[in-house]
Amino acid sequence: MEQTILVTLAYQGGPPDTDESLAELQRLTATAGGEVVLAKKFSRTKPDAALFFGSGQVSQLADRLRVLQADLLIVDHELRPVQQRNLEAALRCRVIDRTQLILDIFARRAHSHEGKLQVELAQLSYLLPRLTGKGVALSRLGGGIGTRGPGETKLEYDRRRVRDRIVVLKKQLRSVAQTRFLHRQDREAVPLPLVSLVGYTNAGKSALLNALTGEKALVEDKLFATLDLATRKVILPPSLEILLTDTVGFIRRLPHYLVAAFRGTLEEVVSADLLLHVVDGADADAAGHILTVRQVLGELGARDKATILLLNKADIISRNLRARLTHQFPTALLVSAVTGQGLDRLRREIGRRLARDWPTVTLRLPYAEADLRALILRRGRVLRESFGATMVTLRAQLPPKLLGQIEEIRRRYRQEHQNGDRPRVRVSS
Image (cartoon, rainbow, N blue to C red; front, side, top):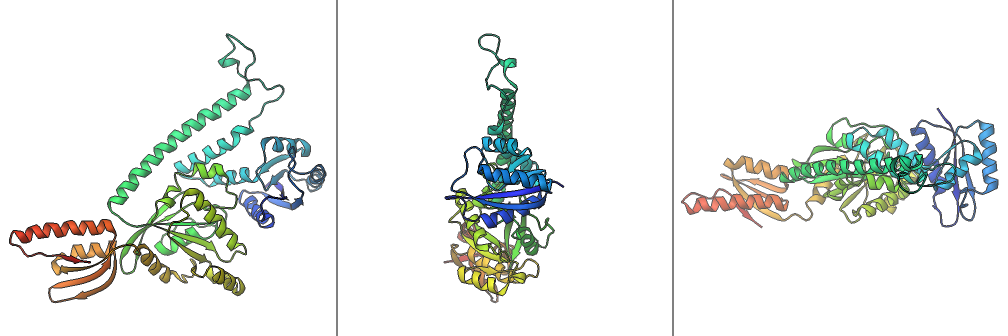
């Protein structure tokens, strides 16, 4: 386990939440397998162009590294390549930044083929501008005829290999995205509403997926425990079927390399009919987490998507924090994936929100049409149902696609009636 020193810099125009971010960096380091021996915060007017920190601050860090026998320094910012190189030379130890640490955790956590491709693409995009050579930088060893190709420097060769690999990865990810698009088309042929879980990392999205589906998706008290998409069918009362998708967690200052690499996967968020924004209600910085997630959703073009805000871990939220959050976010639902608190209300609210824009119709079906009634119960939201001598009457909200299917059935039955048969289905608004 690497002995690690963490350091952040508060400066004018910089991130306002340096204390919370530094505490989060400690959890990220633990997730990556490091042991934090010191977390240090410095302040200055602006970052130094060469070292990021001031020369006196770098001297302090060198002393602490030597005394504590630390192997690694992690900076809670994204360093420019020259700053990272200069710090390593001045401190004589390995230096990484926040982005590199998060990329390392993603590399450890990715299990699916697509996840591994996405993480490698993000890592190489981060690495490319950081490839450096020693001595005089020339693109060729010589000039003129006969010096091209094998004559290029090791640095140029490495850069070309990285660029070529990035091209291959993007091509493979486009192929995966096309396959996902075809799967989405197949799914839309049987129009089940899609609900996506989004939220800050370790907010309890996977635990909530398990609680709502009764399944056993991976749940760990670690950051970024889930990177791969998981989609399950959920039945809401009385029998409405939906698809529920768990997505990768967000984090403050999520590296843009990751947002770009995972954009294909995050299309599930953009295409969802409803988002469940899961928040760790027991975290003291829950409000900051909510803001971070909303910012990332805005980058994805999903800022205005219909959303239910969920304050998870209600069983361990302190009384004062609960009062503050419910005052600040009055429409949020308090839930607990562990105890089941609030889940019945959540199920009802999901059905209500999904059906908000669905047309409301009255259907009268003969008892012989039990299959059609079952389809309506699975795909629509039944508001009222009454049973007569020969017919069952349903007042329901139906997705437009399903209503179109029923209209087609009604058209066929009209044709039957014109041929002398009794119409078996009646639909009215």
